[in-house]
Structure formats: structure tokens, C-alpha cells
Length: 106
Image 1 (cartoon, rainbow, N blue to C red):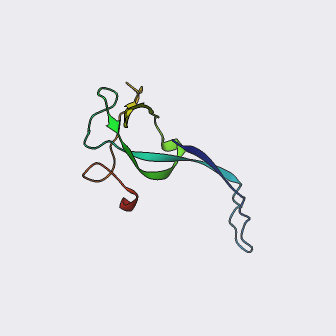
Image 2: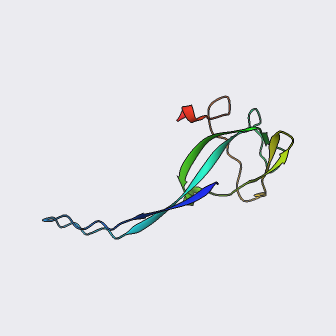
């Protein structure tokens, strides 16, 4: 997760001549996340080392959909994923068949 974004939405008044109730103001909390290129690895970072050298597409998601966060450590010209979520959540690999989703794959 790179950024947390709070979107404040104003109240929407009731349309004239209709029986609809007005909508109160609300806020949505979003997060900017980055997809990592871990190909060809298809292992769970909780149990085995997973490395990446490049990042993929960035996505804005509802923060309520995030189940856990990972860390990273640089070793040479690559990063190792640090996943301390044992027993809580599982690593999920998303993307194309080759394992990497680029900006062009939206």
C-alpha cells in the first residue's frame, strides 16, 4: 500500500417533486496498491522466499478489501517479500498466465 485516499462525498438533496429521501454526506477510504512481478514464483511467501525485481500496475481499491500487508527487504538488485501473516491470510497471485500484470492488461 502506497497511499491512503479519503474521498468525502457531499450530501445529495432530495430531487424536487419526488418522494426520495436525501442522501447524507459520506466518506470512502481508498488505498493505492502496487502489483508485484514475482514470476516465475508461485509459492506462498509465508513458507518460502519470494523475490521480485520489478513492479506492475497500480490499483486504487476500497481499503476494506485489504486483508493484510507485506513488507520488503532489498538484497542486491531484487527485493524479498516479508510476509508475517502466517495463520491469518494467504498470498494471492493475480494477473495474466505468465504471472505478471502490466499497465496494459487493464
